Amino acid sequence: MKQNASLAWALLLACASLPALGQSDPAQKGANALHRASRQQLTLQFEERTRWEEQYGVKFGKSVNQQDMLSRLRIGMQYRPAPWLTFSALGQDARAPFYGKTAPNSVRDTLDLQESWLSLAPKKTGPNFSFGRRMLNYGETRVIGTPQWSNTSRTYDFGRIGYSSKKMALEGLMVSPVIVQPDAFNTPELGNRIWGTYDTFSKVWRGTSVDAYALRHSQNKIGGWTGKGTLGTNSFGARVYGPLPAHFTYSLEGIGQTGHMGKSDQRAYAWFAGAARPVKLGTMPLNLSLEYKEASGSHSGSDHSTTYDQLAPANHDKFGHMDLFGWRNLKTLKTLETLNLNKSVAFNLMYTNENLFSASDALYNSSGSQLAISSKGTAGTHVGQELDSFVTYAHGNHTFYAGFGHFFKGDFVEKTTPGINPRYFYIAQQYVIK
Image (cartoon, rainbow, N blue to C red; front, side):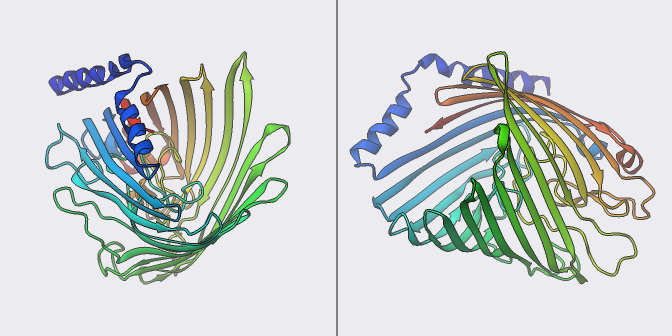
């Protein structure tokens, strides 16, 4: 393992030498030249990312510690023969070299089709239509999103039809998360799907904007994704966001759910409230943010389910930088401070405090699967606290990252798991043609 670590550092240092090219980036120049030569019809897409990470106390000691080199390469192109027509395709190769072929599909997916979509939008305003496979994000990605920190990154088989104007965008959609098959082509699996409407109304009053949505989450694979029975939840939600006096900004989101989860009726909810404000630390910009969110859980002895169905969110950084938890049966207080030392370097400090909504329901991981449970509710509700620090450095098309996180266990983790405090360290670099 020490040899693997030494090799990983050598690779990262080699990548770190790339900025020596200076401001003249031949790859970016070539992409720009292609765009100009094609009369702005062709756009090259390219991303290369490498990350070395060490995880201690995986699943609070239930799994072995990890030291992994993660690599991801994306190459694609967009073709826009007319202002109202766009074709796009993107290939992705995600690897975990030191893990081998046993690597899970969250980190390994040999060369595959990450995106392939077509869009018809005759005018800037009016009807539009798109379909295919694409990485998608809605709102602040608490309901539907693509978690880019994941090495493979979720993508969706989708179809969308909508109408847009200067003040609103109305959309009907059907999206199905693609199931990653590391050594085979990722074929569509539409049995797990989210469909409905997601509508946005911009600056309706004093800068306030509103998102409103009604979404059906269906899973029809009996005994598969949901255990006994199938799943069919209805999520009715809204998000309100905008500026406040004294340079504050805010965001509020609430979701109610009906339907069924397995053989039980579903009656659940989740909500979020957050505020942020930029200040100055000397001459350096400092952004301060505070948020609280809650997702309901089921109580022992209840005749129906109140465990919130988190749909398909991008949970990275929502519950701490270590990505330990998902938005189910959880109450989360989070602060984030971002200090911009200059235009290139940003230092971040994040704190989260986690408590269960229901002591007799489970603690769930980022993907929504059960981590631990005290079915009698005797282990308490305090999950624990997490402290993270991470820094980013941007130089031209390159970005470099490094971070460290530590989780401090609460009573629930102490009593329902081996009780190991997780730690996380990483260093990474990324190059993107813009």
